Length: 268
Ligand code: SF4
Image 1 (cartoon, rainbow, N blue to C red):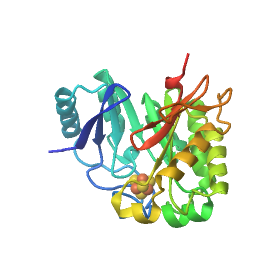
Image 2 (cartoon, rainbow, N blue to C red):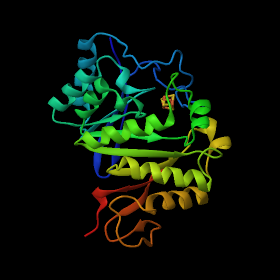
Image 3 (cartoon, helix red, strand yellow):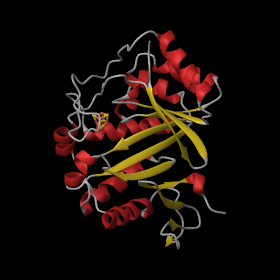
Image 4 (spheres, protein in one colour):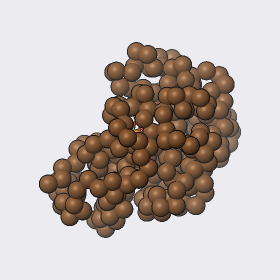
């Protein structure tokens, strides 16, 4: 019998059912700050975690139990590496739900995975480290991976993808919170041209003390990232009474533990 860890939460007025489709960790990276722990044997090959029928039965149960508008496929690792991920996406879409895929983004440059991800209504990609040395040492990807290829993979995926691409930046003390790194983050965001940018920080208690960003720096850097020459931005930004940033076209807001900027919040 297959059982998926899951949780339901509200986000921007809709119910999101987050389902972890990897029973154990499987990833093409082995980040030193991974909340799911060490990756035993990094891989970019899909692996079976049980019979397809069992997984579909579990999904059916969850979809019947929760009134979810969006189903977010997240995982302890890279969700694309579950051998049944495509069937799961088709099944959930067949039930009329919006499907969101949360990926680290590297495999979006591989044809097979690009085609699977393209079936989703929303795809999440991300960046954490912004120089090659840190990428290799802190995110410990598969041999041959490079940071520039990582960014290119997401940018090329974005160019052909017709759904909503959400790009997440995690601020990490000592890795990407200095001036030069923030500039690099902005350049990467401009290259990828996502529909939404989310800036977050280390929230896991195990890493917060060493790698966490304080509230002041989090707000300052987030606002800089979300307002510095992003595509589609027009006019000057202003800070609203509630601390949010806005301009005539865009709104960047603090939402739970992150700052975000997206077209959905376009002001009229
Ligand atoms: S990419 Fe994400 S899931 Fe994979 S090792 Fe890094 S933090 Fe963990």
